[in-house]
Length: 98
Image (cartoon, rainbow, N blue to C red; front, side, top):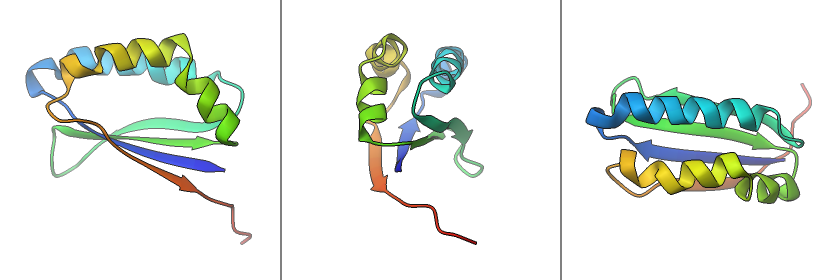
């Protein structure tokens, strides 16, 4: 299982536009084969910071997502909304039994 945390610093003046584009990305990604979870969260202390928390079945699913039209379209527009480069961290994980 692959977990990705993508930290996004959003320009407050463009936040509503960012959220509209992100909503489309999240909805389309939920339909992808190999996607376990894909959610956008707003930081409670820093209102300009968002984190996309992604969980994927495997690296092949991540690779397919990264070439999907909804992701490449979002990536092409992201610079319009962000005030800093994306901070992306990838983790290789396994579910632990309870």
